[in-house]
Image (cartoon, rainbow, N blue to C red; front, top):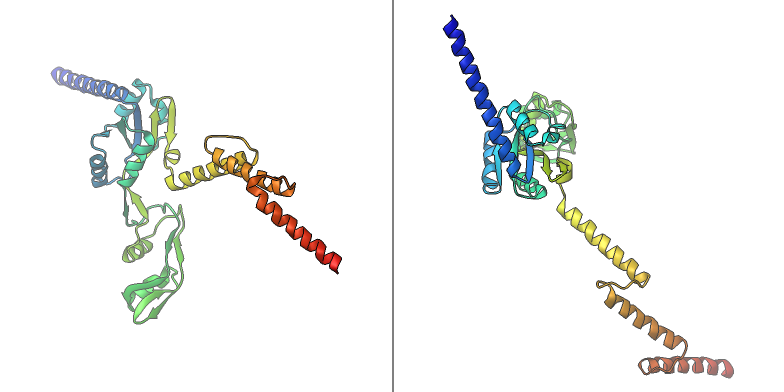
Length: 288
């Protein structure tokens, strides 16, 4: 009996030492990388995790362990601020890559998936109007029960108008899941979801990292054009507007010379034309 208790104590001690060593090793790894990010393991299929690992091979390291081990390692590396907003099971990504680029690459590795009964709709899920591949039959009743406005056109079921079949935040029923699958609608974005990233003294949330590059570039271009237009208007010279300012000054100088009949060679023909026009107008008045 005493021997059994001693063996149990030894096993527990060995397990504790192994866990401490795992924490120590992971904490040292975390400290080596400038970018440390967390990703959600909730509803993450293994093949999508593998796809992300393959895509980021050489750019990022993925680390997964029990939550207690990850938490202790992050605290030991003084990065426990990452845990403040994390919910559910998670893994760690270690990288030298800029957080925005890292998020972008992970997003590219994601894919679409069919809805399953009981899942929460991530967005308003709409079934678009149009012809389906289904002939008249039992499916017609299923569509009607789901609230779709349907009719038969050319022997096939035709959806008359768009229909939001489930709203964001609502639970997807078994019937709705079946209809979405039949219509090949995949409303779920599946893959490694980076939730937070830490670099330097900054903690980035996923909504900050998820940049629409085209929209951002369009805003930058508009801001530049607006600033340049203002600088030209107030005659503030910069490297980007100097040609426009010279062109504007030249144009205004010509207009002023013509208006004041200043005999400058470049506008002499316009001054003479202006004088001739005035003379003709005067002649017509005198003659009248």
